[in-house]
Length: 165
Image (cartoon, rainbow, N blue to C red; front, side, top):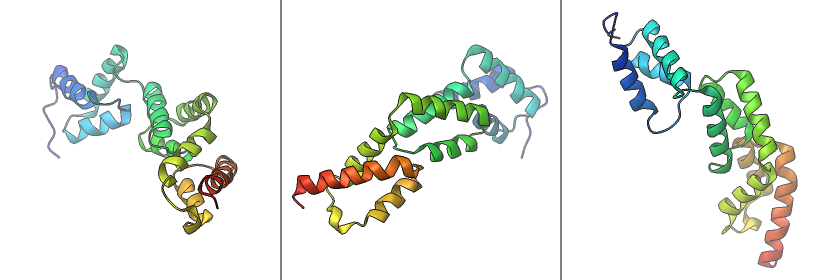
């Protein structure tokens, strides 16, 4: 990897950083990896990250909160998958735990599971799909047994009544 000169203009690094964080929030770890790939040295990267944090452009707590909220409500990912993904983004464990706890207080996870089931299986004959396949799908999405079982049974009962089974 080609290293840039030892005293690059910090403004240039910030410019590259602004461009990278322009479209969505990023974690500190993501930005650090990106800048390393661009060839900047760790000392300059750390200085840039410190300045971006002071300016409010970089905040792992805020990143974790927005990422977790969007993952749960828009992409229908469960808490376990969200936790795993935040770890991959380099977010510290205590931030992840606080974020997930706060999210579970704000959002009814069973309602999210119900919405996902309605979206995914709305036009599918549930008699042709075995329950364990639906449960497996929800587990792979990061949901846990006590979030899935009751909602799934209610949804299947509702669909059977709705479709006249």
